[in-house]
Structure formats: structure tokens, C-alpha cells
Length: 204
Image (cartoon, rainbow, N blue to C red; front, side, top):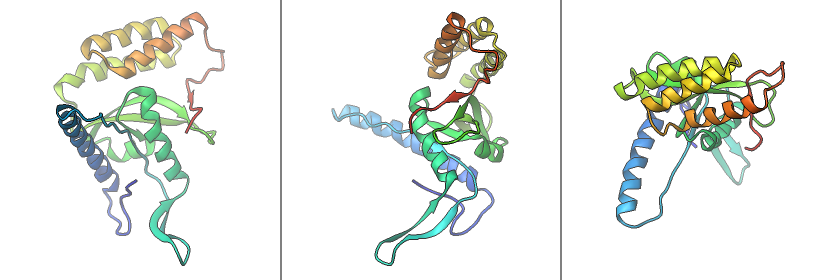
């Protein structure tokens, strides 16, 4: 776990966290290649980032203590780290982090989730790169946004076709593949009228 903005506060802590996450994934790709060449087992990681008010300081007892952070905001970040496995992503950020970095980073909204132990849903985003979208992502992002809106409008046939176009633009996109599966499920068994489009996380 890493935290930014303490003990010395600085206004761009969310951007620094996102930059660190992207650099960590770049290093991961390098290590995976090196490990494969050496015949070593593959390593993989997921990263969750959340921005919120937290308790920070020396936690513990007179015997054992550490300078760390605690609180609901920390717990959400931990849940987002684990949820990468659900979407096949590497970096998931919360809507709160997204609001702080959206003008400097490229991210796509991938779902509305209700994490274990919480009632209020949270919008989550896949962090893609710093700056404007790279050329190989532009069409994908456009098509995915359109499909995502159709999905939440309960137009599952149209959404599925649009997610398929997204896959054509960026083959093997795991998030689009997941949504095509969800669309198929809902076309076979339509959700109730009060469906809110929120995915409920059942595990930590």
C-alpha cells in the first residue's frame, strides 16, 4: 500500500498516485518479459486508487506502531484493487479520484459497483494513460462509451452490437467481452423494472 499527500500535503496527490500506478504497470510488463525469458513463474498485479479524507498518523501501540492511513476511503481503495480481476484490468480508480485527474489522464468508466459492506454505489474507471488518449485507444473509448450508455438504458441488443464494434477496434478487450456476456444474460432473462445497473461485489 502507498499513500500520497501525507505527511506533507500537496494539491496534486491524486495525479501523483495515478502516475505512480502507470509507472508500476510499465515495470510489471518489463518484469514479466524478463521472468518469461528466464523460465520463472509469471507475476501479475492489480492496483486500486481512491481519494478521500482518511485518518493518518502513527497507529498501533507503545510497542508496535507504524505511520499509516485508516478509514472507509482506505477500505474502498483495497476493494478496487481486488476488483481488477473481475474486469481483466490493471488499474481501477474511484469516481473521487477521477474527478481530480480527469483533465490530465485518460480513463474510461467501466461500471457502477456496490462494494461489500456499503450501500451507496461508486462509479469506477479504468486508468489508461497520462494525457490524451493514444491513437489505438480513441475508437475503442468512443464505442465503449456509447455501448455503456445503451447498456444502462436497458437496450441490451444495441449495446451488445456496440461492444462488439469496440472489440473489433481493440481485439481482446476484457471489459467489452465481459459486457457482451452480461448483455447475453439479460437478453435471456431481463432484469426487473427497478434495475439500477449497479454491480454488487460479493467478495473483498
